[in-house]
Every structure is written in C-alpha cells, then in structure tokens.
Image (cartoon, rainbow, N blue to C red; front, side, top):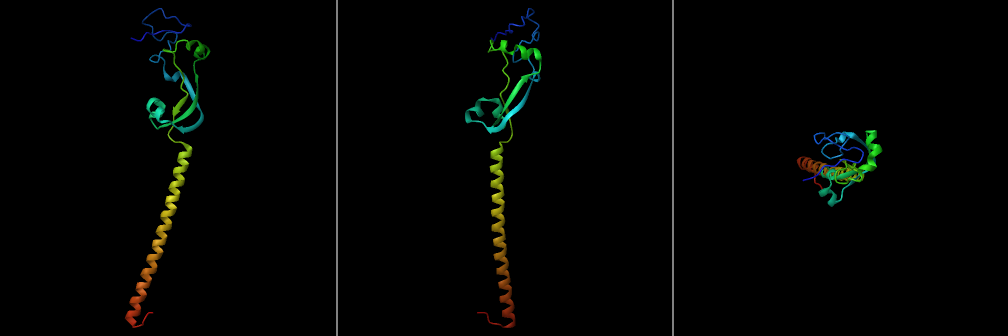
Length: 150
C-alpha cells in the first residue's frame, strides 16, 4: 500500500482532508495548476522513449517545454517537495507534438519530386502516343489516296 505524505510546509491533521495544503500527490493535484510553453523544436523519440514515455506514445515525437507552477505558493515551495520524490509532482519537461519539421520537409520534397517525375513520364508518354497516332493517320491517308511512303 502506498503511503501518502505531505511536504514539510503543510501537516495534515485530518485524514479525511486530502486536498488541504496541497498534498502534492499525483492523484490529488490537478494538471491545470501549472502552465507550459515550448522551448524547443519537435523531434523524434527514441525507440525506448516510445515504449516508456507517455508523451511519445501518441505521435512518436517530443518537444521540450518549460513548465511553471500557476500557484505562487507552490512555486515558492517547490524545492521543499523535492525531498519527497515518491509523492512529489515533477513538472513535465517534454510534451507530445504531431510533426517534426525536418521529417515533414523531407516528405514534402519527396512528394514534389514524385509528382515532377510522374509529370515528366506522363508528358513523354503523351507526346510519344500523339506522334504514333499522327503517323498512323498519315499512313492510312496515304494508303487511301495511293501515295507510297518510303
């Protein structure tokens, strides 16, 4: 059974009072008590991170973030909660992100090259076909009027 502890700044006397003085348990503190903003580019997670980290499970990518407590009381006392590693909440350092810029650029370039090559092949086949049809029509006309073609 996991024992709940409170940081040194808030001694909870009543066992029914679980949210009193911020117990800092993962079960009792809402995620909305901190704000995060990105500080890095979106990058691909390693195979190990994809299996173990929740931020890598959704898209397979991660982005470095800096998170700060919204509550000034928590921000002032955050160093005290580090004593209780089992129950203390550590703010996230990464978040999930949908697209890695370099990979998306490579995919776009590959797509554009594929489209250009397809267009070149299609135009080449079209021109060859038009020439062949024109030549066949010319031969039929020549045969009809009795002209010999060398």
